[in-house]
Length: 301
Image 1 (cartoon, one colour):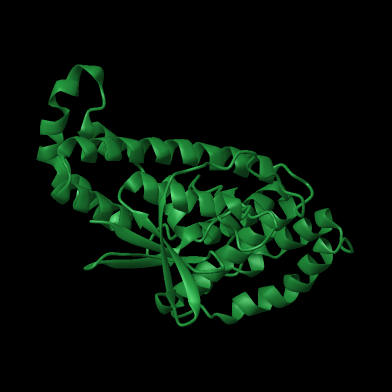
Image 2: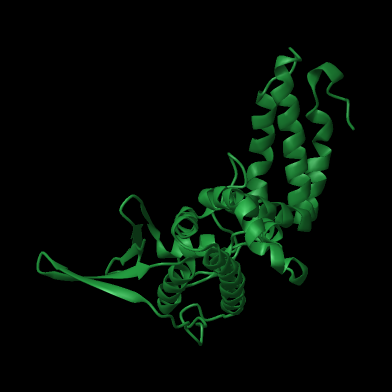
């Protein structure tokens, strides 16, 4: 059974469909998902080693369900094609296509990684490096004429064809590629501007971009003794004020009084109009005046 791969005229969205299956995604997202897939668990299951070649088809039969389950959560279209091959083709072809899948992921991914490094080092963001060699492929094309319009569909019979076509469309549009400084995975930034972090979620509440912004802020604070002194004291006062529910003598007014005293000065320091050493000494001088009331105003660390 063949799948129809339809590409819209802008080459942005594609649809893979058969009589019982349909999947749509953007070309950029799908290619990035493919080349960033961790295939190590699958390659281990497949035993791509010389000493196990005589058992490779038997081993594939035993592990195909686990392989398809893994792929279905990561690459549903790839899983559907492999499942179709396993049902309607011989086991040898299915094995070879899986082998090609892993090879293409590693090969295409390495090409894009090299391109991303070259682009990140390029100062002219409007003349970014491109892939010198665009891959070629053989494909069966179906032509359909309806509603006074000619439509062209790629007829997909293997994972190799699916990936080759998508990768060709992807690189022929001269994409911008970046490597996330947090998760080390490839991604397509939204603009030509150098982008260091992707939008992938690291957990339910945080993305790589949020982590990157926090790390950049912390690095800036650590590198500047004035900002570090300001942030540490601000955090200390905020914490003892937040614990006011446990200490009936503490009031959150302390936090705002301290901010009123130093917030303008830190802005002036950042603008270069206030001396940093003077500001540090002023912060230290106020420590004894901003302590939990239960410990006494003259208490200091």
